Length: 555
Image (cartoon, rainbow, N blue to C red; front, side, top):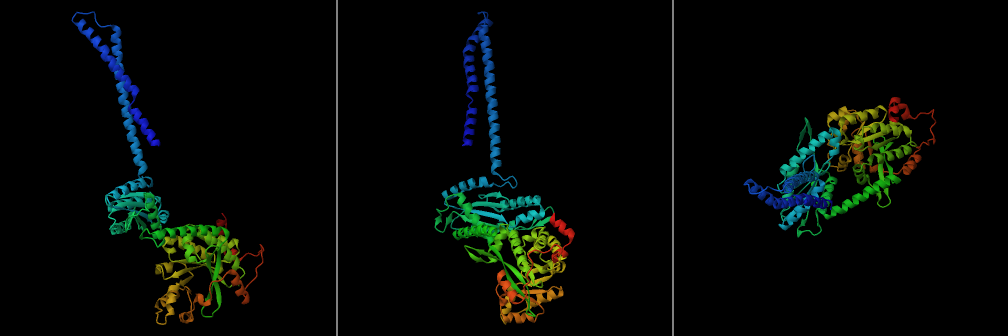
């Protein structure tokens, strides 16, 4: 509406009646007066008259001035309008273009998609909307700086433009999210598959930016306005296409990233359930629905209980008891894993204070938490605040933590070990740890992944992998924990491999804090603690934490 009013004002200005009227009237009067004056001038020139009337001459000169004024005014106004139109056209183009990459932006992409869709449908063609999102690009920005990130986006846009057909539209929707639309023969959707595969090959190749080598991966979702029967009436506009492609892209993310999927209606239900889970996790975190469970850890040689691993459980009123395999990845994605882990550790510290002091507590740490440079200080502060001895705590990190920033991880591990906290490498054998990393990083223990241990169930299965890991641990002077022990055959075989610690369903399912208390009370391994620790009796963690470190934590 505002644009229409502006156009109307410009149109009126172009037809400036005042300026044009003045010039026209002056010309008419000039013609009328000029004829009379010029006749008198001619007669006077030949001596046949007394000459023109001075009043008429002055009127004619005034008309000439008015003609010149009106015409110049009209020309200046026309020039001003042309300049204004050019400026407005430039502003319109800038409002539709992403200034960093030169692609269309989100605002203009919707309109351009709708126009292309209508044109394609008139010619009997289908339209594909392809959503592209870079995987872990925030991490690339954090590690290399936003200047490097911007250069990567510019290079990515150039690679995409190079591989896309001329009839495709490319847009940067914001951040690290791109999209393109292109018409195709609805009977041959494999053309879109081929196009996307070519983009993967080009866009995920190594980038060289300012002498830095950076590798990118991306997740892609594809939607179309056609199906096997032809035009799909449920896809009525460009916004629906974009929404479907967005859902397919998130499905690719959830399936492991660095892949692509076509939209299917079932994905929308999955996304809706995912959103419900996200809402439930946030609500459950605020009302205390997440609780710690504990799995026994046993010395395989003696059969003695030596500690517990704390496992997170979600007691949802709607969903029941939810496994961490479901909610932990979502908690990581929505950024609440740190708060969740901290709340569970506080509860676990309170529970474990009443256990036999010889029993240890193992806690899993998310790779997301290990990206926080202040994680070690936060953990030590929790230990001090809740009077839990540092030497009884063992944190477990996975091999994926080592790929993000080995230097920072090494520093955090050293800081924690200096205060008495033990650090284990969890799920060993499933990642890509190098021998150099194992040798240089100060781990206290290796945990063999349950997938290797479960293979020992078969009498004909080879134990070479487990043997190799145990031998590696012995060579590096690192104790070994085997997880996933579920029957006596596995236990007997592990006992022959040396002195190991183990855990698994053979020793019982994970238990609540109350069930653990009952178990320990029956075994005489429960120690009642006073409600308040006298100030004169410092806890073990306080005696082990460096005072200077404590002051830094408090600050």
